Amino acid sequence: MPKDLLEGKTVLIVDDERDILETLEDLLSMCKVVKASTFEEAKLALESQALDIAVLDIMGVDGYKLLDIARAKKVIPVMLTAHALSPEHTIISYKRGAALYVPKDKIVNIAEYLSDVLQAVKAGKSTWWRWLDKFETYYNKKFEANWKNKEEEFWRSLPYV
Image (cartoon, rainbow, N blue to C red; front, side, top):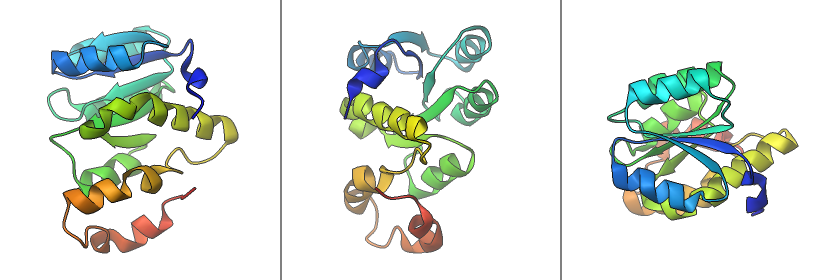
């Protein structure tokens, strides 16, 4: 994916774990990175800085409230989580307007995922257009075999490549 879409973008990364912030900063070296380790720091950044994307943890920093703030400020919100990793939280994130939901286990590919989101925005597509392609196999291994059956209509309606 064209990671050059990320060149020059300002990305807020929010997580209460310092090692995750450092990892994200390294992985997003082509961007201007703004780090926040608390809800308050993230809220201030969202309200006072020009940002393109916000990568938000859910637990520990009240990521869903930050998602709402990001959307109100027209900042593209991407959820990145470990503790709230579930098909249910994936659906909640989608319905609340997250541009994408990424398991922390897949953090090494964050630049690719953010590029996918920017590519979709540029093309006027759903930012979830590659979600099943990128994460369905992972979810198949992580959750019970019938994880999609509980919300079958939702998963069927999700945009696909």
